[in-house]
Each structure stands twice: as structure tokens, then as C-alpha cells.
Amino acid sequence: MRDKLGTVICNSSPIIGLASLGLLHLLWELFDQVIVTEAVYAEVTKQGRNRIGKDELGLSIKEGYIKIYAIKDELFINRFIGRLHRGELEVMVAARELNAQYLLLDDKAARVLAETMLLEPTGLIGVLRLAKLTGKIVSLKDCLDQLIQNNYRISKSLYYKVLNEVGEI
Image 1: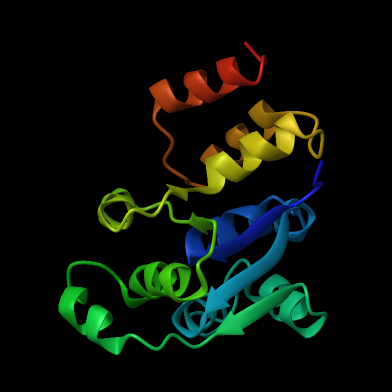
Image 2 (image 1 turned 90 degrees about the vertical axis):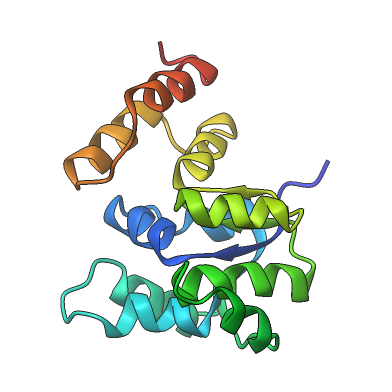
């Protein structure tokens, strides 16, 4: 049995969320290859001096855990820009171009568009759920509670559903 999943393309929100928990390392522990696009890299590292995840992402790239990818299909970006952020669109394009098995998107509209492209997005909570199921974290509830304290919006129904799925309720 393989011990890691395939390639994952990440949007900024899951990176920032994992960094806020001190758990960015889960990405390369769970996936064979972790990729961010140029727009996602810029969003996390260049917008705001004290942005959570800025230093963590930079170090992860420097150490080779995460790679930056330049997308090729600008036409797709131009078609949907304004409806979604460039980073979200680049994540979808990169997933198609690289035939990635996983993409991390938290925004609901972005996930809907990704699904229409026959991609299967998951998000920050999906990564934390997987980390719990594989024994990489002890308590999913503690992570979710910390995210809520950090102003992440998690619906009560999703909160209880995912905790029930991993046996923490």
C-alpha cells in the first residue's frame, strides 16, 4: 500500500489555515508532490507584511517541499477572472495541466466550477480529516476549534459531520 497520495495543487486559504495551526508539513507528509501556482504564491507571500503562512510557504519552497508552477492556459483565466480570484482559477488550470489527483480549494464557488471541470476538490477540513484518519494529528476537534478562533468560517453542520466521521463525537 502506498503511504502517500498523488500530486496536490493548493490554493492560498488551505496553506494559510495549515500554517496558522503549525501544520503545513501535513501537505508533504500526505502527498507525493505539493504545488502552488504563481498567483497563490504571490497571494500568500506578497500581500501583507505579517501575513500568516508567508514565512512558512517561503521556507517550504526553499527546502523543496513545495514547488511553484506557472500555468499555461491564460485563456481559461481570462474567461473566468472577475467571477473568481486568479489564484483559484490557476489552481484549477494547474490541476488540469498536470493531471493532478487532488486540488485544495475552500471557496464554494471555486469548488463548484472545479467540479464542472470534472475535478474533485477538497479543502482545508478535508486535509485535516485525512490527517486524523492517517494518525498524523491526534485531535481534529482541536484543529477545527483553533481555526474558528482564527476566524475561519466553518458551519456547525460541517463541524459536527466531520467530527462524527472521524469518531470524535
